[in-house]
Amino acid sequence: MRLVLVVALCAAGGCAGPEERIRRALRQATGVVRLPDGVVEIRAELAVPAGARDLEIVGGQGTVLRAADGFRGRALLSVRAATGIRLRNFTVDGNRAALERPRGLPPDDVPFARFQDSNGLLAENVQSLEVSGVRFRHVAGFALLVSGGAGVRIERVQVEQCGSRNARGRNNATGGILIEEGAAGFEVRDSVFRDVRGNGVWTHSRYTSPRSRDGLISGNLFERIGRDAVQVGHAVNVRVENNRGRLIGYPIEEVDVEGGGTPVAIDTAGNVEASLYARNRFEEINGKCIDLDGFHHGEVRENACVNREPVERYPFGHYGIVMNNTNPDMQSEGIVVERNLVDGARFGGIFLIGGGHRVRQNRLLRLNQAGCNESRARFGCSHFPGEPDLLQAGIYLGRRAERPAPARGNTIEENEITGHKMKQRCIIAAPGVSPAANRIVGNRCADGDPR
Image (tube, rainbow, N blue to C red):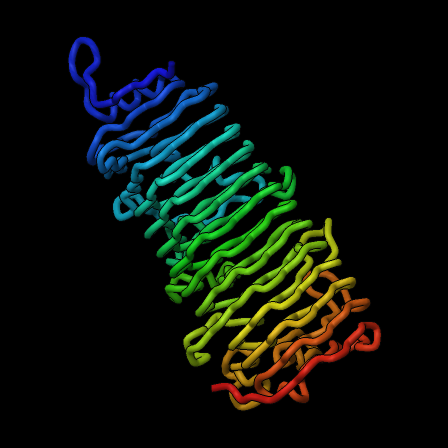
């Protein structure tokens, strides 16, 4: 029989306040903790004891855990080195208006769990964590920060109006769900992210930490995200499937332009392999559609990114799909880019480096909305030195990104490419890169002036 603690009851010797009653109940470290009804103001971090096991925390009627104006702590609720933790059906209100303070990113050798305070939920090295039906609002840090651990299932959560800014008033990447430090076996499913200043869902590990692995990010909705809707960072075997989003890279004034935080619908960082981005659809992206910096030996299939407004509405607009190789432990190799739609990119459709890629049956439409390199070049048509065709090609065969990686040994076939002067600029190679070193057949190219 499971121990059930009803927090609304008084302790022997008198009635403590609701915050203290929750704290006492959590000390039991097992069983079911039923939170009180209504709003409970939290003044200091509620910590589940290390070693807790088989603990379920359940909301009551309209339960809201709200940070007090003077709240101090890493998160409203934290759990560390525990097993079998379930959280469901309550609201976390981070009182961002009172608690937000300017903050940048942590040093490279410091995980976010040791840097960022005022988070909603912090889980460190938890084995088997389930979070369902929880709403996060007005959180200054991350709504949910998972650091290490395994067996994480997050579903049907809502994240709204979360995240803070740096000293320049730009987003500092906070606000959404962060999974860091080699977490394994994680899922983020069927959830809603609205008005998040930083990244919506983000996996991140420091270079010296294990890569996160065996993840699923599926069926989520992203609206008005200031940085990336999804970023897969330093990971193995992560599937990003069937997500939807709109207005990525807004509000414009909070984009981290000084920090190079170009918004992306689906972003990549670190060393990412054996992963799949499939059947995701995004609209109105003030940045890139898909960034493959560090992505190798994986698949990008049947995704769609559509911009319908004039190019002026996307000041940070970019290429559709971009490859890169910042991480020194990987090479851009063996990527399948197949049956994707890029409609209305500011520059080109696909920036390609490396080898062994298969780029097939993509529809790259209404490209080069900026009109590079003619009279409309006021839209940021700044290219690598000596590579004037970089931003005006439908598919560009590059010679390098962060490191040299000339495009060779790739198959580029049966793609449809339209846009500003695309009939003559359909597939262009950088100086020193040979188109003949790639298999290029059956592509259809046509002009179509920008709106």
